[in-house]
Image 1 (cartoon, rainbow, N blue to C red):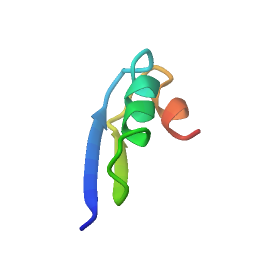
Image 2 (cartoon, rainbow, N blue to C red; image 1 turned 45 degrees about the horizontal axis):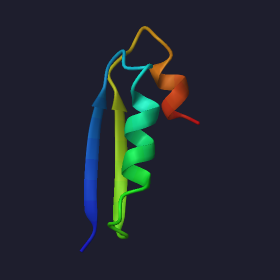
Image 3 (cartoon, rainbow, N blue to C red; image 1 turned 30 degrees about the vertical axis):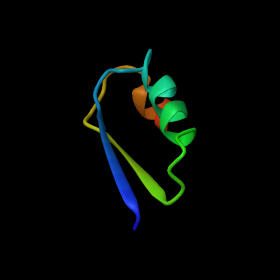
Length: 50
């Protein structure tokens, strides 16, 4: 069974990379990570697009 993880993001440029790394390093193998930027005015969108 695939686990879907949805992360809403709004002006979290200082913490979103740590969040993404943590999710990618989790032990659950069959997962998808969906990041939703809700119009951030900082660099959140450019960080999640990397």
